[in-house]
Image 1 (tube, one colour):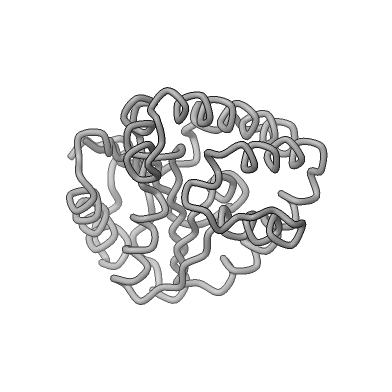
Image 2 (cartoon, rainbow, N blue to C red; image 1 turned 30 degrees about the vertical axis):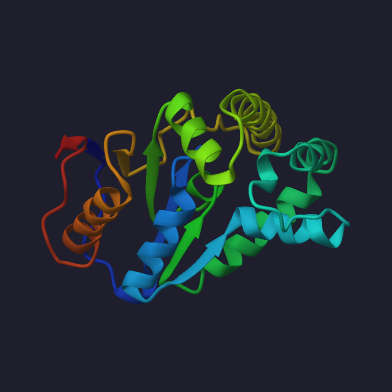
Length: 212
């Protein structure tokens, strides 16, 4: 269900930065928002910031499931030729992280931030595609095609910009949660337990990769 990596427990609340990461359809945005609301933290999304830039460029980003659409893929292709778009978003996320008491929903912050508690949500491509298809009323085959192209191009962008392999390099993460076997509420309660006992309390440091 979860692996935990060593993380210092004696941290003042105001300095806490949580990074929640996972591939499309893993539920990272939903979980990040819920965690932020529960603890009274601020919530910032790299995806939302990119969509705001896309809207400024004339893209119609308001449709549900925009990322898994032809227009969303078109913007992704444009990002590959315009790395400053991603750098601009990441610089802003780094600024927000300095505020403390924040939850970042981001694909890059786990690698770019030196500090913070970093969580990866793991689920198979099939499970993620089913969730997106149901959420956005899309055909499963079409959804799989979109997410494969999206993830392939996104990996290429980050590999070129920063040198890490999204979805393949798990070194930065302190916790890995298998959300394929957990529903949204279960994933929320598991992460709350980790935050309450390893971050907000002066408990002993957790051994590397101790299984719950």
